[in-house]
Amino acid sequence: MRVHPSRAAAAALLAGLCGLAAPAGGSGAGAPAAAGPPPAREAMLRRLPLQPLRGRLQLRGPDVSLLRGANGGPIFLQYREGGRSRQLSYQPPDALEITVEASVSQAPSPFGLAYSYRLVSAPASRQSAVDLVVGFTGPIHGLASPQGWEARPLASMPALDWSSQAGLGPGRTAAGFRFSARPGGGSEGLEKSSGGLPGFVYGRGSLPGIVTCSVVGAAHPPSAPAGSPPALAAALAALPQFPRNGVSGSTVGPLELPAGDPVAALLDRMTESVKASLALGWIERRETADGYRRALDAIRREWIAGKGQGKGKQSLTHLELKSVERQSAADWSERRLTSEAYALLSYNSYWLADWLEHHPP
Image (tube, rainbow, N blue to C red; front, side, top):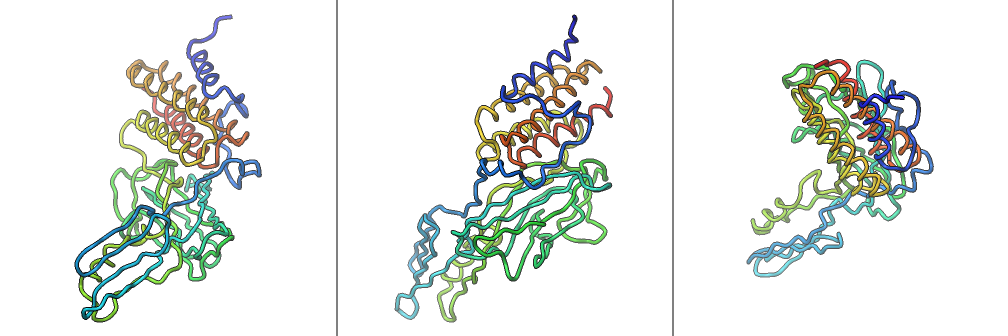
């Protein structure tokens, strides 16, 4: 029996991806399964908690000195006032052990994909979490918040801030942080939304990517006492500002699609996300990550080398992408991936394969 070369190449790609599992599901023609509330076995995969700026913070001068050790304790400021030495201490809002869990699912039309977040505060946290900040690019819609939390865009960066007066105490969990974003559509240019809210723009669609996130704890901001030297006020102003004064890290959110032919650019983005996912604990084993990285690199090289070769090359790339999509479903089912890594691999592969079907050479 003669095997079609494109199908043989796709089968070889899938077989070499990880060598750990057979493809899950059928033809993969439908949208990826939602990586919703993770099953119990996902607890084997440990997401890394967000981290404060742990480096030593030092400032020494004739009128003021500032010191913070590397263990996340208070910041101590010593300054001279009226010929006497005085000290001011400040605990930044980062006395937290916080994990942010993200999942992506299909949203009702026309919103495309729904991004959901779960905030988990360990008992070791010494503050209540009062802000969750998640970055994004492109337009987002359909904001939802847990009870007691309110969402607003930040004017200083493309990010959404959920804030709460009561906050989330140590050892507690909050779910229900959510918004939607369209994978395609919208105008090519960027403009303010009809509501005029800063940070919300219309533009090209977006797909799951790695974005920054921060959680800020409840802490009183420092202030210079009356009559203190100007150098103290300058030192306080130089401290990290919201939201970098909390704990920070990475999660999954919408990143705008690249202009023009998206195939090579998105394959590059996916390859980098695989490397990051291993470091972040979203992929359990290095050999799993290496299998995806090799597969994505090979698809990109073949796509670049074969541009202009017509329908045959497009069909081969489509089959290879569907293989990556099915393998990610199998690995997520076996808890080799968290919901974050699954979203990065499955939804991007699905969208790229679909794009190739609708954009003939």
